[in-house]
Amino acid sequence: MSPDNPLPPLADFDILSAHLLQDHAPEVCIWAGENASERTFLEMACHGLRLFKGSVTRVGTTGLKSLPYIGPQTPALLASLFDQREAVDPITRAALSSDFLRLRGSGGTLRIWEAGKIVDVAEDYYDHLLLACCPEDWTSAAHVVGTTMGRCDEHNLLGDVFLSGRLQHLIADNAIEASGPQTSLRDYDVRRQ
Image (cartoon, rainbow, N blue to C red; front, side):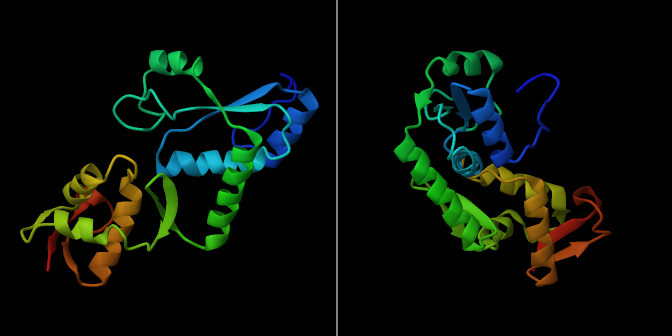
């Protein structure tokens, strides 16, 4: 890739792979921890790099501190881990690519990390956790969502946007009662029915 022909930041992997083939890049390193979102990225990247002839390596299977995600790690730790990157051999790349195609074709909308694999789950999978975090007394919706986020296991962290949407479903299903305008999590209170 040349400075006068940069790729867009979220380039399609097929376009990226074509650029890498033209430039004869010797290696691509994928940064992905052991969790649902980054494993999905790893599988998608291996699928996109299926024609890439150079070596593919990975950082993130070991050495991460606290959470098994790349994002919360310090730059110094990440720099040290680069020297410990692991090769992703062609057979593993093909298997990861197949896993991505399976996930993509499954029609699932929510996936979790379970026993070292990504599996589809129903979109209401976390509703029981939201209900458990919602008391019978009026409580800020933001508090309920934040508490739920804190109780997710480390391999399946969720953001407030997803949980807020599920909270709205529980309100619509009359499992949770809401008080106040539901324009923002901070604007209304909720309680379990």
